[in-house]
Amino acid sequence: MLSDDEVRLIHQASNGAGNFAAHLTQRLFPELFTASMIRLHYNYHGGGKDKKQPLSPRRKSAIRTYVIRHFPSMADDTNWRNEGIQKINEMLRRRTRMPAAMEP
Image (cartoon, helix red, strand yellow):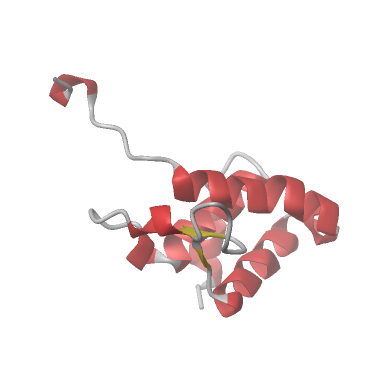
């Protein structure tokens, strides 16, 4: 899915395992990060009070594989849930901010 060089660059730009997982999500799900903000209708598992859609199982598997390759402790399900999934969902629900100069 991603070249080794691309994964390495994303890893170098990340501040830890959860941040790396979030950056990979942005790269592997570009269709969610458009001006229409489709990402607000998704989370890692789907469901919840807003009945969000789940992310693609194939791409979720790729994200976890890349993260474990660079952060072996993330192979533990508890670590993955508490760091990886949490950061991915946080990034999916975060609204984009306007630059301060453009705020009313």
